Figure: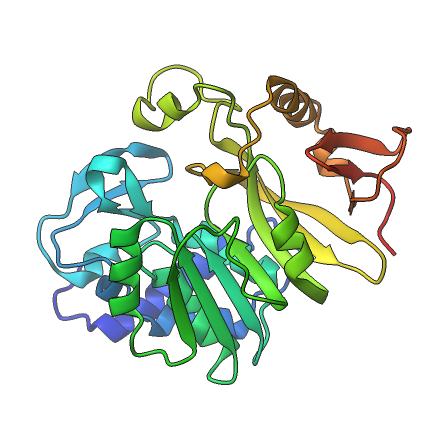
Length: 309
């Protein structure tokens, strides 16, 4: 790593790396505005002073401290700790780039970021929607919300809310980006979407007692254990909601969006293991009898093989 390399060049190379990895296996063209946002937003501004503890996707539980506080150390496709004692990190850039690209943000839209942490990916969103757009960033942890508010004070179009993203309503919005694991899509999120509005959220399994996976992770087989699942894209259609799988995902829980019923968890695990959840192309909310098109009934909704109209 060259100490002569400027942060601007480092961010540009970072954006190229992140977006190249985000594009692998994706059928969606990469948003030029999203790529530009990764090249423009200074990541170090949102992570506090270095040195930083980083980890790689091949072994996210092993954290290594950078040898110095050179910001170039964090312009790589790595996770960076923001609250080390709680295992909270600024997530993997290529993963967020892929998910945000699937969110299909447009200039002038109103987006909600649930679980904004210290605000880095909120800033990315703000750049994409532009000065004519709006971003409502919600963070349950008061200390993180305060940090995010300070970090994002240069954006007049961003409002940071210290609150619960499962109950706080930002009104009708164009896009919702959820960065905490839920066992089901919250009715509030679905109801808040404008026509053609999009929701990206990690649907994860979180059985009773699963909280221990977060603090004791690293031992044993983690396949489909608590906190692991799929990143889903839901889009409001003229009648109903279209659904698709974006990628695998692993997240800390969004506790207001966790169904404690063992049967709900059992059904989701079965859908994960069989792959049937990936076949769903719509989300049905109206009461109906189970039929051959029903792939997963959970918490007041049904992932179905019937296309949304």
